[in-house]
Image (cartoon, rainbow, N blue to C red; front, side, top):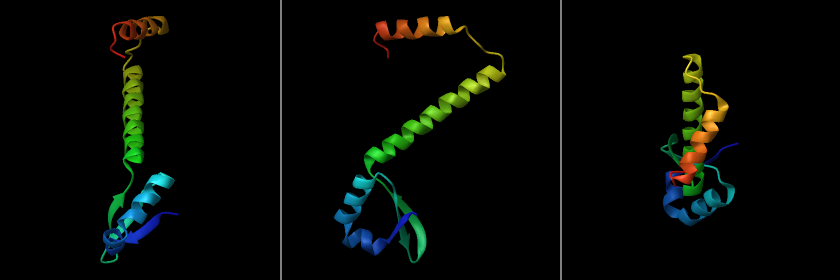
Length: 90
C-alpha cells in the first residue's frame, strides 16, 4: 500500500518524511489539492531504480541483438570482458 501525504505535510514535516523514505526505501506520494503531484524518495532508492532501468535497457539491447542474429561465442565475450578488466575499463 503506498504512503500518501499532502504537500502541507511535506512542508511542515520534512524530517519525518525524509526519515520514512530513508528507512523504508520506498517512495512517498505527495498530493496537492487532493490530487497526486510528486513522488519523493531517498537518493539511495532513486539510484537503485536507475540502476535497474539501465540493466533492463542492456537486457533489451541484448535481446534485440540476438533477434537480429548478432551473436558472439561465449568464450569471445568472456575474453573481451577480461581484457577490459585488465585495461582498467571495468
